[in-house]
Structures are given as C-alpha cells and as structure tokens.
Image (cartoon, rainbow, N blue to C red; front, side):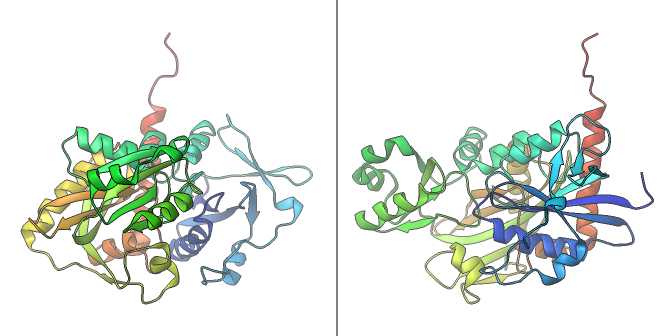
Length: 369
C-alpha cells in the first residue's frame, strides 16, 4: 500500500441520474484531502463502459445539469474489471494493459445499475472495498416496494401504497386506486431516485399520463397516498453502530419536490437546514431514522426521508437513499456540516467504514474444511 490511500471515484453510469452523479463526483473529488488520498477518476458512460480519466478533466466538467457530460475518451482510456486479484483488479486497456492499483472505491453513482446492488455485487466479486451499503442493503434500499414491506413488517410507519407491474398496465383500475388511497396520490418507479418519473395524480387523465411516464423507468411502480405534512430528511452514518444527524426540511415552492425542482429550477424548493423542530421531535426522528437504517440492512451511509404528519404530529418514513447526492445543494453532506462534521471529514469517515467492513468480511471463512 502506498503512503497515501488510493481511492477510485466512480461517476456517471447507465442511469437516468447520470448527470447528477457527475456533479456529485466533482464535489467529492474537490473535497477529498489530497494529502491523504491519491485519486483515480473512473467514468462510466451511458452504455455502461468504463474509462479512466485524468483528474484535470474535472476542471472542465460543467456545473449545468442540462449540459454536464463526460468528455469523449480515447481507446487507451478504456478500463476492464478482472476479478480474483488482490491488486490490479482494474486494467487500463493500453498495449500492454496497465493495472490500476486501488485500495478503495468511492461509487459516486445514483439510480439503477449504481445503487441497486448491481455495482456493489461487481465490486464484491472483484474484491474491492467500496463506500456505502452492501449488495443486500443497496438492493433493498433502492426497491421502494420491498423496503416499505420490510418497514411495515418491523412496525415502522410509512404511507399506504399499492404495487403495480408493467404487465398489469391494462388492468389497473383508477377507481380502486382512489378507493384505496384517495386523491391526490403519487405514482413513482419502484427503483429510481432524484424524483425521476414521479407524478402527482389528481384525476383519471393525470393518472394515465403518470403511468405511461413512470413505466419508462421501471417495470414496477408504487402508487402512494399523499401525506399532508412536512418533508424532513436525516443523514445516517456508520456500520454496526450508526449515528444520525440533525434534520433538514424540504419546502417545495412548486406542486411537489420533482426532479426539476431539485436540479433545474433554482427556485423550486427552499432547504431549511437545520429544520425548526423541538428537541423531542429531533430525538424521536433520529431514533426512527436509525431503526429504519438497521431494518433495511444499511451500512456506510444513507439519507432517510420522513414526513411529519400535520394532522397528528407523527412521523412516517418516506424512503431511503443509500448513495445520496453530493452536489453543492445536496442535503446529506450539508446536514452533517451543521451537525459538526465537515465535508472532508465526512468523506474520511465513509472511507474508513468501507475498509472496516471489507476487513470484517475477509475474516469470514470461505472453506468448510
């Protein structure tokens, strides 16, 4: 191992959240302590191909979510994964191939093929330590349907919902949805983030539009009741003994906190950090966030989003995000900053947790005899 820890930063990916990932990665790399880490940039294009990029590339990476994109690579920047090695699991496909020596991977990736367990499984097979939840935690956290069922089984309150598969598209009854969940309600892909494909439904016409669009992003949808209350978010950090930050509040200035409101409209929402809450509310919310984190088998980090219901002041879990955004406006690092953990130190902790879990897993036997 070199004097500095060698960190590979993954960005981009085959996901509708490709552009958000690039913006997050830029912020992460800028915040990583260069006295502690040697950083290798690994860009994944929208076809899922891996490429090595020089660190100077970040200087030219746009901050505009509409135009940000990986520059076209040369053939010798292509990267292949070679499982089973102790080092050099990644190769630059030069002639001859050059091994990329890494100690840990920081996957700054969002959405499908990124935080749904697929990337985590690949890194497990390659025997590369990585930041964030493991395969099970990532896949459960990504699938809102499965997550809500596990939370419900654990007695953790969340919004009422229906699950619909694409093959059931023609049999979906708007009348049943209204009877079960009321109006308005929300339609969202079961496996997506950043509010991609999420629609607020107020009538039969908007319901049909919502289904058509959401099914573009997933074969399984969630239809949820609308909760009248405050939208609050909490950052959780750690492995076996996680800790929770204070809360932030998302105050949409439009109909709801859509992808456009998050990333395209500067006036789409106000983020109140920290949120105005009583000490009792903060404590209860933090306990709920940690319980949710542990119920869903999460490690490393996650943002836990909750509602504080207006009618009775109770908390309901909305969803978790196991690889939350690290853009300049992202709630996860901002909440830790106001809780006393600066951005660069937060990244240090995340890398430490990744290495600790890898060591813990390596201590398990792989042989019966």
